[in-house]
Length: 227
Length: 235
Image (cartoon, rainbow over all chains, first blue to last red; front, side, top):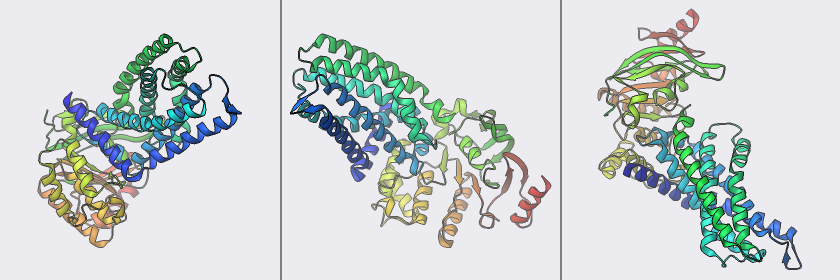
């Protein structure tokens, strides 16, 4: 188990070093997420007042779309010099490689959300500080569920010619439950009469999805990468 | 399980992608110190065979025996005895040569990584440029780093896919010399190539492939190009 975490840590650290040198994935993902939020703001904010209860949906749409972009770019980098195969050749548990890639994705998406959440709060007058820890729990669990499936599919499609088309086609239907739970949970704490118990219910559901998705991905990563 | 082995046996190996057969009924045995050439035109199945030997692909039929173990029971211990260099070089261009080698050294769980990396950079003739990003290197320099990456953990089986592509005369000669060194150390080398003139005299055995089938196993006298033509004509 110690070796598993050691390998996962090495992969995350390598991904962060590569990203720190290029800033390619972070900058494109962040720019795309901000653009999505701004476009919605132009359409849904009239005379300084946003349409009711749209903030949660916009936050999660921006997260999902920018996350898909980040997944594609991160694995495109591994494809260019075929380095994903080099990782799979290493005498390490292959699920540890997956865990490292997933952790790297979570860090990247977390950085994007750090900018995205205050912006959504500002533009859509969402009360992001009413229940901050519940909001953090929703974002962490929702992002984990999305990235767990996305990392598996992005790795699986890395050598497919139509990977850019196939990734969203495969990813979105499976992560719809995660998106719904994220949106409903976030809406519950953003609405004019917040319902924190309801938000906690959605967090619990997201934890359940995370356990299922991460377990399945760890279990299937090696077979799907070598079949 | 150490995963150590003295020979590799490919037994009635087949691989298909849906209905398309990439490899059909391939069998051969190679021993430590052999340099085996996989020769054939594009689509002959050379890269697929290398991927199966490198445990990156699962065979549809048949098996590969690494000494007494197969992929199924070898696991990470077996992979620690295999080195592979693909046509793409398996290096992160944003990182320096040293960072690449240190990363893979740690990933392989090697002892004394810093010293091994320093030796590898010296062998590659890149000690002075070891802290430059790989993206700033020429193709030949990248190839030398990539080869050292594949050899960093001192594998028993070295798999090379088109290792001479894009190299100038000096880099080609250096690579041939390095392969002979590893051969003398007892490493079993299997390489796929189109460059028949370069590997003529280097290979101890040749496997001629066509459309996923093994046409002949050779290792005789005369120019390699003539033997290749004869094998294709006889099929």
